[in-house]
Length: 297
Ligand SMILES: *[C@@H]1O[C@H](CO)[C@@H](O)[C@H](O)[C@H]1NC(C)=O
Ligand SMILES: *[C@@H]1O[C@H](CO)[C@@H](O)[C@H](O)[C@H]1NC(C)=O
Image (cartoon, rainbow, N blue to C red; front, side, top):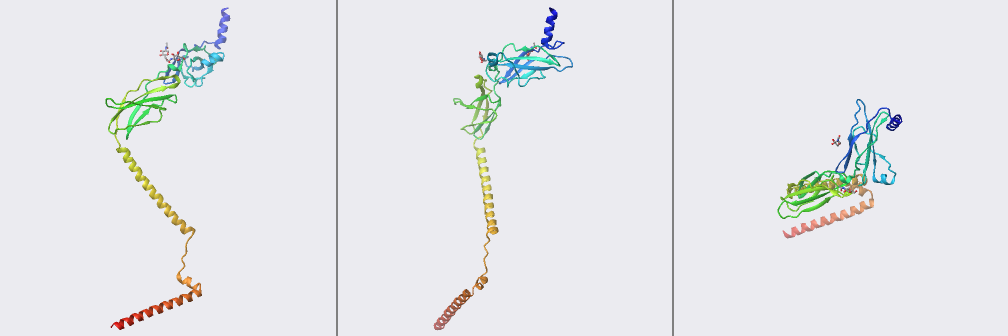
């Protein structure tokens, strides 16, 4: 009887030597990053591998308790596994781990209580507040696509109202318009995760003194000057190009007068005639002048 049982256990554990199962499975979850950990199975001078499998509510209810190998850890070498990608719904998940050394495998060790991602620890988001002209610039921690942030900001003065802004993602700094140059503004933020319907506590309040309009005005002026310079260069080059094209494509040749006259004898004659008449007129007029001058004297 004992021999039979021993054979069964040998068959079940899949090897001659006994490899202990990993102990103390826990899920550490912070800001929707889920890490499954266990106590390592120590075998001197040997490398132990681990296989992780999971079972969501769907698998346990509708798929006859099928276990799915974890995307990151089949197998893995360290005594932990990032199971963030395996957990895609806000339902209880079971996890199990077994060790493997050569041809030996340990028994499965299962998480004591199923893990639900709604129990993740949400920390107040890291936040950096600066100013840019009349804008309050809020840089938030990028916690991934599941996170939104609620930013509350106000002018530091008794009795001022708080403004609230929902920020959809943490990777782009938010510019919040303020109306009072030289005033001090304060801000705080909390993270929201719609998938689990929870939010973190607010971060510590940070305040910053607004500089005012000087900076944007100077910037605008610089931009204007730069734009004018570019415009001038463009216009100049267009004009230059136009000239170049005109001379190289359709050159206008101006014939010297002498060439034009010899091209037609008829013209030459008529020209001569006119010239002679013109001469006669001038001669006549000068004779008249002379006459007038003589008569006067
Ligand atoms: C179980 O794991 C947790 C987290 O990794 C650790 O803090 C604790 O000391 C472990 N307990 C034992 C008995 O090893
Ligand atoms: C998580 O969701 C379960 C139901 O699925 C609920 O019983 C439990 O109270 C929730 N826990 C938290 C921390 O919201």
